[in-house]
Picture 1 (cartoon, rainbow, N blue to C red):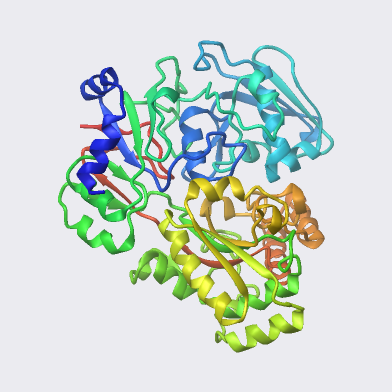
Picture 2: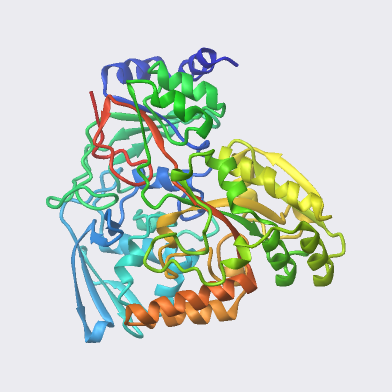
Length: 524
C-alpha cells in the first residue's frame, strides 16, 4: 500500500464529526515504534504501552531530567520512626477522567496492584508491614525497616505505578485493565481506536497540573497545549518518512538509521535524541524451559556476540549514536563498570561456542525464537542472533511475527508445546539500568520476575546489599560484583547501547527530554 493510500485509509475510519473536530483543533499526529497492542501498563512491560500509560495515568512521584524522584500527585511526605513510617499527602485538585476525585485509597490500591507484579515494587511491599489510607488525602507506609528508595520506586518511568480508581486496581493482577479511566493529562478515546492503525487521545480538561516547579521529564507541571494526539501506526519506514516530510504526521518516534541523513536535510524537520538514557539491547533467554534453563548453555553464547555488529545493524555507521562496550548497567552512569567485560570484547570464536555448547550438554533441543518484525531494531538484532545460533548448530525455529502477537506471548511460562518460547531480542530504556534497584532485567527472581524468569540467589542477595548500602563506594563495589555474577548466570546477553533519535517537524516545540512525552509540547 502506498503512503497516501495508507493514510487515506486510516483517516477514512474516523467518524466524520471527529475529523472535523480534529481539523479545527491543535492535533499532534505521531507514529509510534509499534502498534498499541495492550493497554494496561502494569499488565505488560511493553514500551509502547508504557508511553500510552504515561499519557493516561499520572504518577505519585516522577523522575526529573537528572533521574531524581520529585513529588507529582503527591503534595509532600513526612518520614518518621527512623525511616520506617512514611506519611504521604496527595495534592489538591486530583481528578479521574470519570469526574471522581482521586482519593488516598485509590493510590493505596494502585500501589498494591503494581507491587504484586513489578520487581522493584515487590521489594517495597516485602518490607511493608502496613499500607493504609488514613484520610481522603493521606496514606501511610509502615515499614519493617527503612527504605529510603521509596520515592524512587514509585517514580519508576518504566513498569511504572499508574494511579487508577480503586475499583480497577483491586482486580486480580492477571486481568488486563482495558477501561482507561485514568488520572493523567490525556483521555484515551476508546471509540476511535483501530487495532493495527490508530490510537487517539484528547486533552483532559479536568487535569490540574502541579502548581509549582519546572517541567522536566516526568516531573513538574504537566501542562497540555494541544487538544488531541493521534497515534498512527505506519510499519513501513519509507512510508513513515514520506508522511513526515509531507506534513501528514508531525512526529516519528524511531526513524531508521538509513533515513536519518534524508530527514536531516529537510529544513522543516528536526532529528534529535531526546531520551538521554537511550536504549540498551539484549538477547533474552527463557530460563524456565530447556535448553536455556541451563546457565552453562546460556554462558556459551557470550563468545559469539559482537556488540559492534549488533549496534551497526541497529543504528548504522554513526558511532556517536551507539556504545559497543556495554555491560549490565547504563554506560557512563555512576554504577557502570568494566568488570568482566572482556568476555564480550575478546576475539569472537563460533567454533569455541559450538564446543562450549556441547560441553554444557546441549543435545539439539528445539529453540523457538520469537521475532517482532515490525520493530526495526529488534528485527535487526534478531537476524544477527539467528545467524549465530544456526552457525553453532542450534535447532532454531525462527518465528517472524508482528509485535501485537509477540507481546502477549512473552508472558507464556509454559513449554514450547503449549505456545511458549525460548529466546527473543529485547531493548530496555537506559534510565532503568542506572542501578540495581531499577534494573528489572538484572534480577534472579525466577517466575516472579519479568519475561525470561532467570533464577540467581547470588544476584538477589547482592541486590539486597545494594538497597541497604549507605556509601557510594559500597554501592559501586556491589555493582561490580553483580555484573561479575551476571556473566556467570547470564540473565541476558547485552548487545550494546544506543541513542534513538526522534524525527519531528519544527512546528512542534518544547518537547521534553525522555521517551515520547506530549505535555508541554506546543504546535504552531
